[in-house]
Length: 117
Image 1 (cartoon, rainbow, N blue to C red):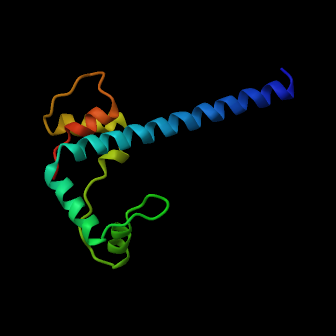
Image 2 (image 1 turned 60 degrees about the vertical axis):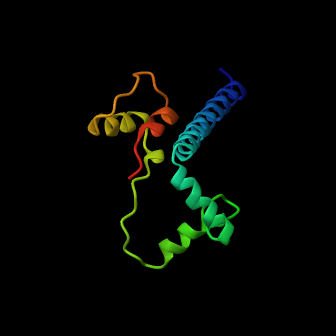
């Protein structure tokens, strides 16, 4: 195998790795969106925040209000970020909570099953 063939193979591997990472991020966002859609109270609260001009997003998509709260030094208990968990970790959480799910369920489907706390 020549150096150029090796470089092309390595580039394909890196590209596939990035695609997989982005697909996982997309699945996480889809799950969060589905969970959000199924929670009318969260939707109403978010609409109220937006109407008041609170909770503006920064260019990188982070919620400005969340950053402000983190920087105040408040020692509030942070909710678990289920979207950041892997599929097998989500399955473990659902099993621990006694929530049934299909064995082939995808990450966004598992996230939608987690009850709001």
